[in-house]
Length: 296
Image (cartoon, rainbow, N blue to C red; front, side, top):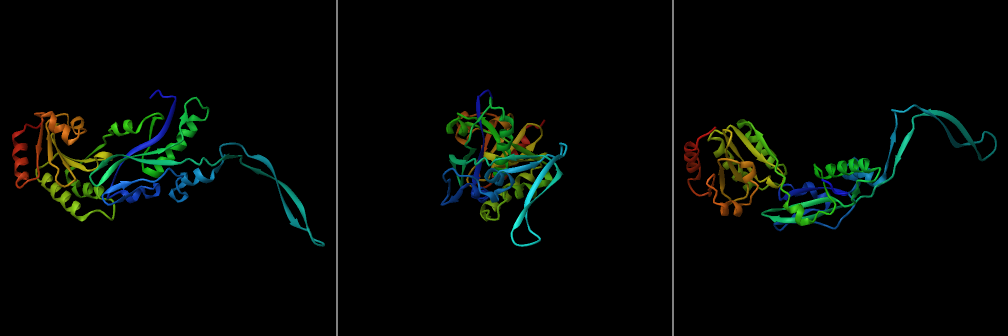
């Protein structure tokens, strides 16, 4: 990235199940869609860096030598009424004072999804690379957004919402076959998770684990609705949490091809990708296909 000005931001997938974790940013889920509020300074209660953003803070420099400091206060006089100024000297560590930043954070729906949306969350104050305090300010903004969202990235300050939407950040996690319950637990972290969605996901994941995958796959970010199994080094079966979607069987380049939308995959007519709709008997069909496909 060679941009002279940058911002700290992140693109996240907000769903019915995780929307409560973004409520402090004015993001909510209602009537099947995600809504956002106007840019605002994060609340103090959001965490340490949010409080520092509002109030500033002090750093006691224990890495430096102590310095002589005079402190004064008014003390009551022993005789008569009134008070007098009393002073004394002490040895104390130097203190760095950091003013409040008062950074605001904005959220914007980039792409509606079924039962959710792709949302851009950004600290709106851009940072100039030529500024002598650039590194310090960048670290503060990264820590602030990570506290608020869980992750943070650096983007060109002039990036449009369309550019953010085009960014596809794939983060697949591979787990041992015996981690089926862990996959389900990570997919449904919210206490308000839809029981029907949980039931469907559990049934589909159980069907996959019976086929003997070498590893289980769990998607993150905008791919958090995806899970599946890897059979050998190249053969991958991916499911989607959304009801009605099909299972996709990838014979090669699964990490690249899985970034494409469902319609793009269908248009490609790629012989290495097979779409299996969730109709009666789909489990048996997948089993036959896996047996017929060589595993490396």
